[in-house]
Every structure is written in C-alpha cells, then in structure tokens.
Length: 200
Image (cartoon, rainbow, N blue to C red):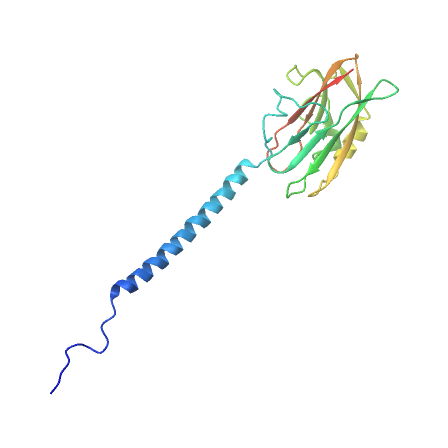
C-alpha cells in the first residue's frame, strides 16, 4: 500500500494572518493620529483667531498712517482714509470695515450713544494728539456730526460686506495730530487698531 505522509493542504501559517491584522491596526492608528492633528490645529486656530492684529502694525506703539489698513487674523480689515480739508477748514475722512470673517459683526456695538466717542472705550474714538499721548477729552479736536457717524456704525455688518463710515472733525489748530482708535465690536475679544493723522 502506497502512503504519502505529506498532507494534501499544508496548514495555513498564522504569521500572514497576524501581519494582516497588524497592518489594519497600524492604518487605523495612523488615520486617528492624522485626524487628531487636524482637530488640534483647528482648535489652536480658534484660540488664536479672536480678533488679534496680524502684526504690530496698528498697535498703540506703531499706529497706522492714514490710508493704511489694519488686518485682523480672523479676516476683518479696517481702513482709515486720508483726511480731506473742507471749505470750512474742517477735515473729513472715512473708516471702512471689510468683513472677511465668517460671522456677522456689529461695528458700533449696541447703542448709538456709546458707539462713537472722543475718549474712553467706544467702538470708534477720535481724539486730539498721538496714540501714546494722554487721553484728554475734548482736547485738540472737535468731532462734527457725531450722530451721523454713530448711526452709520450701528447696522449689523454681514459676511463679505463692506461699510464706510464718514467722520468730520475740526482741529483746534492747523497741523495738530489726531488719533483714530477703532475697536470693532464682536462676540469675542477684539484688539483695538490705531491710526495717527496730521491735520495740516
């Protein structure tokens, strides 16, 4: 009788099955690490993008010149135009908001009475002197048609919308410096931006 000691089907090695399982586990773990990294990056962005200026330009120590723009890291851009001398020797300029954020903003806050001022912490403050000078209410400049500027600030500013707010001032003397401080109101923190104008 002829017998063959070799089995017809050799037993399957457990090593190839184990390698497949390890490959799947490594793939799943890699995917989880990548997803976790993306989520952490978005979380860090959400912490840093709460209305900070993109660089020092526009800070109280480094005010912007008229015509320049303050850029916020969440997409908001604010520009204060060059001042234009009027026939009555007053000066006019504009503050323009360009809402590149993904949220509606309220540039003037909640009340026209507190939206535009000559001192303090209003959303727009126009005062005499340079940004680092002491804040002395009514010193160096008089704001004309404050109510008109305040009413232009009040409506909500939707995503991808622009708004230009007119401002008119009367300096006490020619060649005086004027500071424009803008703190756009929003649900989160918003860093103020400063412009230094020379009316002369």
